[in-house]
Length: 142
Image (cartoon, rainbow, N blue to C red; front, side, top):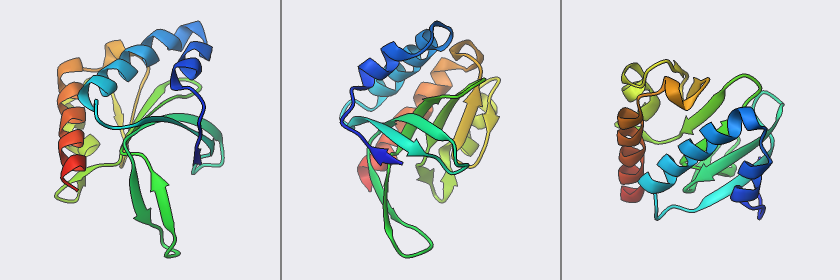
């Protein structure tokens, strides 16, 4: 996946009616919790080989298993076929924040750095905001 110069707002407007409102609401929560972090649209093949468009917040650089520098986002938001995904690539003492906050987030499927849910109504907004604010704190300290 690669960063693009495409408008995040135009991407949100292009989404189908059934997910647009939830994506806009979650984008607003993340943007408010991470106001100093850049908001960029990423596009391309994701890990499973599917084409994706992910709104990335913040930036980090890692080294992959091949020793290559890889750019990525600290928090990401994407509309999938049947659910929404939030990727939290920030850790606290080696543990992904999604795993730390997952049980308190509501009706959420928790992966290593990913959270999946059907609607913004399925998540506990206060806990979600707390998690994103913690991600911003940890990312700023790096």
